[in-house]
Image (cartoon, rainbow, N blue to C red; front, side, top):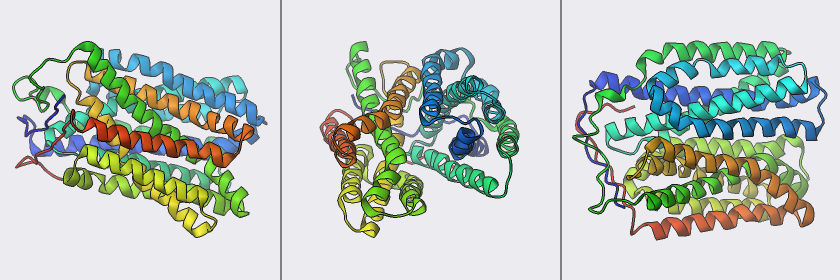
Length: 413
């Protein structure tokens, strides 16, 4: 296949397009703050309900399962309601589930609330990714990484604010309710600014030009699954770093809990920086070249972080992983949304489902392997997978080309 991004016929005014981009970034930011708040309050939820580690793990699995089930309905909902209406309905609603989580008085209520939160955030995530792809087509250049950067910023803010509220003795209900209501109001405010795809001409001036031959449906599915497999590797690596990096640093370097967690903070901060600069890099070097280089960079950084006996060098290594991984998922989501020969929303949903499976199963698999061998051996598995990702990206080069040509009159942000 050859997907070539060209300047499209825009029926939006520059102001409408700019506000559509701001609105989509706001939804990404809301998802990030919600996820960060969720993560920051998990230890307090565990203590307040007196849950064991295993019971909490089961509740978290309900969150993942809720997301997995919801992903199967995302494409039909988008087709029936449209992106703008779906985001207008669910955008202001999903943060309110944080209040339900905070108010849960039993494991059963918590599990249901977790499943609902996972389901709604998954649908919002797929819908806003599709919206971002529409906006990217309208701009006729790579801008996907900048959207995902706002999710990373939101995650840092959500976790930070949630942690500060705990320090200043806000109750779980107070802190999560305050953040939830603020996000819900923000969601209501941006509804009218969401991108209206009906003003964009897909039939006369489609930004994705198909190759001379028509794609066979089976080939389209193979492409979706291939991209989904690469997203699986990315999310498995992110999950492994989030859940096991602090334990590895503490065991290997004999440091306290703050320094151990600091490794993940460095990783997350570098990922945020990488996403802000990712679009310029993609436009300069190309999607597949960036995908290939990012995978190798992440593999090298993770190897250094795991194998170095020097704590400072190890921390730098984990930062390099964040930079390498930062643009991989945005590139892959954009590729899925630009595949010709099938439903764009189905492609995004199925590829995202593969990522969700990686996030659900990866950390657990690392734990099982660590128990039978060692954590170092288990954590080297993502290194091997990242090398495989880069090799696949290299082999994809003859069959995929994604080029972006800057439109003349479009606003920047």
